[in-house]
Length: 473
Image 1 (cartoon, one colour):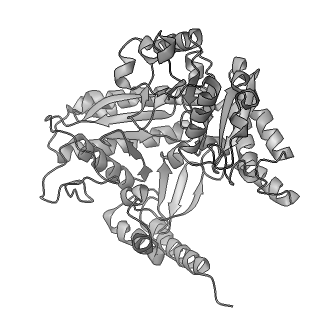
Image 2 (cartoon, rainbow, N blue to C red; image 1 turned 45 degrees about the vertical axis):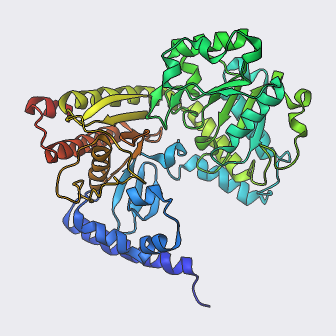
Image 3 (cartoon, rainbow, N blue to C red; image 1 turned 45 degrees about the horizontal axis):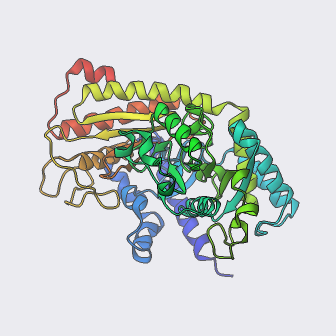
């Protein structure tokens, strides 16, 4: 029988990987990166060329990170050429325990070996019951005592749509307030007018605003907002899609402020690397009283792929491991160390602006020391033709903050470090290592990142004081 397309491609990748791995062991470090290797990685199996021909242009990671991963474990990804990278993107935060963690694999194997149904569209199963039990153990106590869990489609906007529909049905009001940076600078009362007729159905916020450039919401402001929303019977919705499951140094980011929201939006790391999303809400908002549960199929929260059994098993194992191994505390400790080193880097290089974040959710802002206006590059690449070496097509060095961020990302990749970009102008390098990161891996990541920044700064003509640059590294 002829081999399948997948088997043929996998075989080609494996052969290319073995060949390149042998060359690597003979002549250089397994984690090193050079320009010559880019062609090997890009050509292995022809996968990148096929992807470019077959898929749409909406391939942001593929454009910014020309890597063909074939194996992964923990913090390490290996590509088709045998090159190894430290992964500080973690699947945009979905991999709390990194790649192929043993407790996650074992949980999934148990489900597969049991011959239990894998897809049951919300029917009660032992796997779902175990997941909900573990989830309730991790919630803020005042929410856990009154919690209702609603699984929804695992797409990016689906749990948000579910939460919005829930509070609208419960309050009979329609407006949803989403505080921005401008609101945070003003009094919290601006979110919930004292006039009952002008009150919103809910206030929705992220405790750390990832897409805005990794911006933590101040704890005192969040406590003030919680007090006002409670006084005026306005549900507070915390979107913990990216911040949950220990990422920020607490199991849920709202725990830092001691705030208990009425609704929690959960996704990404919740499924232990598999697609899973849920909305947890106070029973005061229960659909049995509001009519929300009687919404027809197709309403927010409905859908075929909700509560997948493998994802529930992987998620329960992840929640339990993070809780039992105190990985949130581990994230807080290592995150503090990373922030300190990166702030030293900011003091040494003018192209590094604000460094911020919580736990292992960290943003490093790249800025133009010359005041060049920022422009958001498309799909991780600058729109003015910046080349793979970080220079512009006209031969000049990167100038705007977004160009500098792209250049830093590419220099990181050459050093075997995968990082992502975020922010409205995509000038913020985001570090999201898995919670299992070790002290040694932390040092390696910081060294590679500092070396990448120094290289980009030198290319643009910067001259950091030698003693300060050395201290930053």
